[in-house]
Image 1 (cartoon, rainbow, N blue to C red):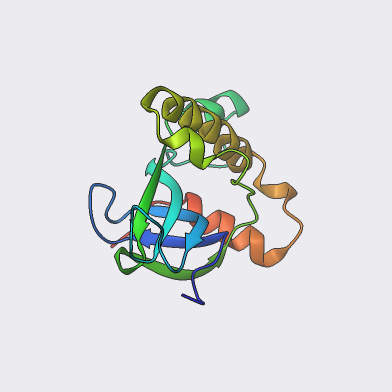
Image 2 (cartoon, rainbow, N blue to C red):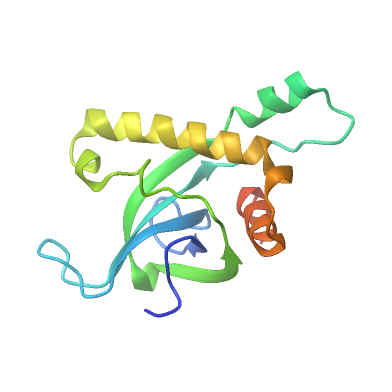
Length: 145
């Protein structure tokens, strides 16, 4: 798929995380030995951060942001919906494919991913590109439908 590239914000359409937003980490256009269809490795938010307002203190903002819960998953290309948004988070280092095989290492991957996502969420003002800032802002909002 030419539309689905690394960093693209997608919406998961099927399965446990249906209706949740995710970021494409890696695409497999031809498939591989286990999965013979085109699929993607995505990292997303199973639980979004709670609403934050300007009046809230810094500690309260951090407390409301900590409830974020990430997921990492291989998903068929037909089961994701690409949006127009792109984020500039480099998740390839955080989400290593070799670690996703073992259940214990998968937990560590999710913990590291949570740190990266939380850091990005709390420091959204430091994004220089307007387009990337919009994508990041969209990614952390709960999908309303």
